[in-house]
Length: 123
Ligand SMILES: [Zn+2]
Ligand SMILES: [Zn+2]
Image (cartoon, rainbow, N blue to C red):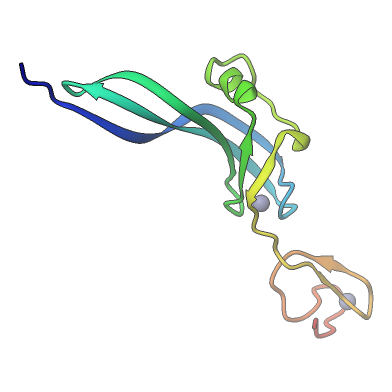
């Protein structure tokens, strides 16, 4: 008897897209969902999946969040098409530096060297 078997980890994008104000960088961006799982295959056919983990990624700044498995399964099954900020557990969040103009108190997320409103140099 001869078996070909293997164990691998895979990443799968889920059919999920939510436009939102990004909780990390404040830009108007899109949240995408994907999952990773390990599987055991026999003769190249996956027969067992486990260790499913679900994630949300924001398209604007690439911030990564973990979400609960229950919520992830709901997204995978197409039952859930919206997540709340409170569902997101930050893993790798790209906070852009907020700059506040000392002259006119203008707040910007962009990497401006000078205030777009009054021209004051931002520190
Ligand atoms: Zn963002
Ligand atoms: Zn200013």
